[in-house]
Length: 315
Image (cartoon, rainbow, N blue to C red):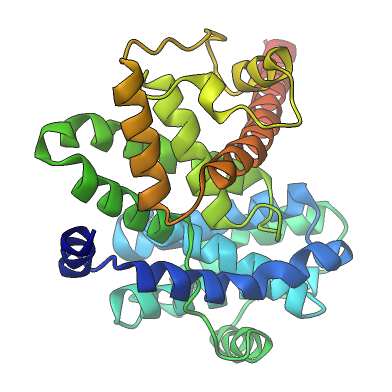
């Protein structure tokens, strides 16, 4: 095991890093105790879309979006957020994230920041909020306000960082011959994590760590690498667990695992080692992430149906 730990250290993912990341994520626990401070889902989703546009215009990619979502959720629970100032808050959170992730100052001009937030401003005004026009002075002041509310601690471990940590550690254990299959699972896991994050705030029962680890387990089942039964929570029957899993699958197909018993055991052991956790924690994470993903998929289907109905009315 010492050789594995040395390899993890060389790749920048030692077990001590996991413990450090978990200590940082413990600060999210008060979120579950202050649900009244969370934004309404429809308002939050508009803010997340606004920050997505801002990130893309600044860097040409969505790198950092998970961090912006996490910081926004933290800010909402650690301060009395003013919805009318949400466009300013979105700019502030994106600027903070870009400085942390890219170590450079955001490139957009004041005019561009304002144009990027105009859509959110108009939406809020249509919902009855009195939103003032944004200015560079307002952006700067809100950035300070957000940093003060977060107590200047913005080194949060978001879903993207947890994904990188888990998959790097698992890749060391699995070896080079397994890398192609794992890369596909990694892409799917992070994509599903973003779907859930768009629909649900980070809370203590579903931190970004729990979300990513649970979705990793579910995607391993979907890839045929882990039997669904091996991740069945103790408080659910086989039928209930299968039903929950099927709600996370767009095609509604039951999973198939063709690996031998020793291979299944080995992969589950590697998952537990990569996450520095126990098999029971894998089950609990898969359960929580599965429930959240099922709700997110249902919400997406409802939104698509509503959009299709509106389009038919316009024809």
